[in-house]
Amino acid sequence: MTIEQLELRLEVWKRCVWISLGAAAAMWAGAAADWLLRVRRIDTAEYLSWLAVWLLVQGAAVFPAVWLTFHRDWRRLTMVLRFHVVFGSLAGAWLALLAWGFHMQSGVFTYSRNTIPPILAVGMVLAGVYFHLRKRLFTAPEAIFP
Image (cartoon, rainbow, N blue to C red; front, side):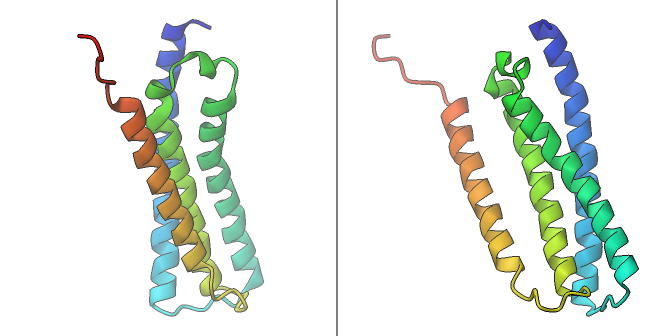
């Protein structure tokens, strides 16, 4: 596969990442609203159906990041071109994870009361890595001998 073909396929992956981000945001909004309004889920079937949808969204969010980072063909394309797509995908996965944390706190399993702080810590680490790598990849090195 040529570089031009990879760049065209990267546009398709960008659209897939936007779709997974939208699905994760919708799941987060619903779970956060349930948590804020103190809605208690006592039906196990309802919880398991939500969990199945969550697994689908989580897989759709993580797959592009793993595929674009580690697949042999995509490694020929520079990381500068793939960077935002990969981290957008990881952001969608984190948002879906945050939705799971809110849903766990208002769900059937009441023993999981401290799921939000570790998920927020993962988000802060992910943001720190993003900004560090962005600064490192997108700043031009200074010329020693002009």
